[in-house]
Image 1: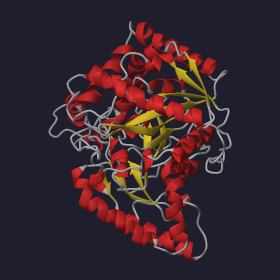
Image 2 (image 1 turned 135 degrees about the vertical axis):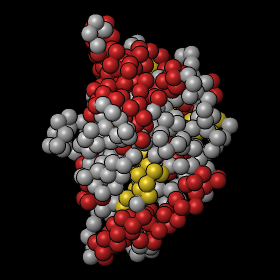
Image 3 (image 1 turned 135 degrees about the horizontal axis):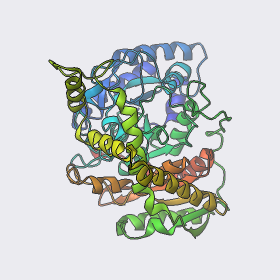
Image 4 (image 1 turned 120 degrees about the vertical axis):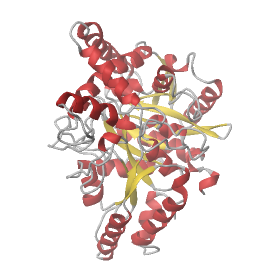
Length: 485
């Protein structure tokens, strides 16, 4: 059952080929036997999952329910889930049990009837590109357990790649859906900022964070993103706009689709073998009728320095609430209030989170705000203008997702700058707020390579259809790690 697509799972449930309880038990057994090799889950909610599965079976027996009813899903441990620990991969929230559901948790489980298998491991407070900053230990890549799965959504992608869940939620602040999807042979989509509610999603950088999906195919991703999307009055950044028919939009010809290749994305820094796989994919898009042209995003090389001013600045503000007073980790035996603050935050936050809080506090401080933060916001506007000009002449932008295949665990933990450069191709989409996705385009020495597609605002349907057409013509996305078959 773990090899079936969401469409096939839905058909099997409706035809009574298997029940949601049987399907859920199958995945729970795989998690129990295989996840110790990967560490992809922080919390497995077996009892809740079986109860939800039974409710889904009853609904299906009455001829009710929708396309996702009874299908299991894994949640990234950044989404508040009532009655379940929501840790954000941090010691700071190790004992925090959410008193309410995030909007997408409600939409997927209460409204769509999906079954929650558990909460997935992640980089602490979504800060990382390798899933090595988690308080619960690093996640391993199912394609090679000596390598990273990418981050911060490393647990989500590892679970789906190893078939420990059919699909999983994830978040993307600077590439945290797309980069790990590329390193694990998955399809991951970050929708337009404001398309999916952020209510109940623990904040890292509020103007950049966006929830999305990691799945085995564009078709699977479309089903889940359709259910997640829509206006939410509880989120002030949610956009009141109708959601396109993402599933119904699949299957259209892409003949005449204009795809631009940014010359800056194919310059120095991209591994030659990865470049070859991406260019092979470009030729496949051409064979499907797309029109390819070179474009320029001249300010894209400034994405990384801009992001690492804006994101830490917002993080320093968002994480100020974790002080050991109202909730979160509190240091024992502190003798003064100041000592309690210092020790609670020092013990509760890991090294990478502390580093970003300090950077953010510095760039927002008196005398440095204009020199750093204000300047970064001006460059962010220039990056937005680059995309605005690009989409006047092309429909989609295509490039690599990551500079190379997955690297070894521990290879970059002592070099923060080298780690930050992993997101060099993905950050611009977050700064501009446009939708973007990664899909597999081949392998180098048995390790997956991903290509990135970026679209204009609220153009998720076009992105998903282009990816679907490519996946209909190739079989890279169907391949899975041998050790987890």
